[in-house]
Structure formats: structure tokens, C-alpha cells
Image 1 (cartoon, rainbow, N blue to C red):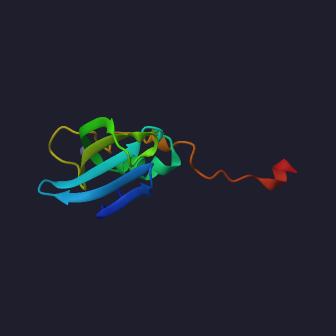
Image 2 (image 1 turned 180 degrees about the horizontal axis):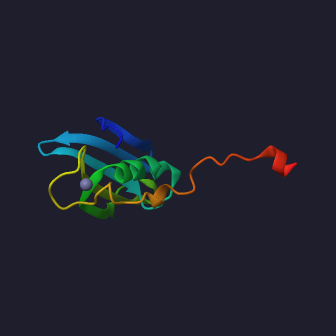
Image 3 (image 1 turned 45 degrees about the vertical axis):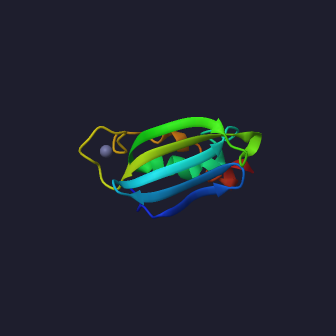
Length: 115
Ligand SMILES: [Zn+2]
């Protein structure tokens, strides 16, 4: 698990705005993204990374009119995020295989084999 730090996780005007916040119950991840931004979009990758690396629980997710976002519609979601595996039902980072990040590794090309 990477360390949780308060502040912006991802930001791109009219596309994605995501932040980690502290509230009375602990950490929360608040995300607003244009409906054109898909799960595998590079702009959304930092959000996926937080969700993959930590125990989380989705609190809400709604699509709503948002003039500040591309195409005027945004998905607004909120997750509870734990720094340590909590003793309550959640999506556990220790069980999940981070499939969303598959294919993003840098592949080293063996020049000798290509030439
Ligand atoms: Zn857990």
C-alpha cells in the first residue's frame, strides 16, 4: 500500500477531478469525471491506482448534469479509503488483482533480437 496523502489525486480541466480528503471517519476519495473519461483512460489511472492499492468501499456514485465537465455530464463518486485493512465489509486490496493496470508496464525491447 502506498501512503495516503491529502490533496489532488488526478486533475484535468473539464475531464477529471479527484481528491483524497480526511473526514470524521477517516480517508475519503472524491471523484468527479466527465462521462467521456473511461476506466482505462490515462487521466483516470491515478484514481485506479488508489483503488487498487488500498482497501476501499464505494459510498456513492451518480451521473449528473455538470456544466464544468466535457459534454455537460459527470459521474460523481465517493469511496471510503483505509490505510490499513479494516474490520468491516469492503473491497479488499489484499485480495484484488490489479487488472486495471495491466499492460501499462514498460516493455524492454531486446535490440539485438530485433535487428
Ligand atoms: Zn482489506
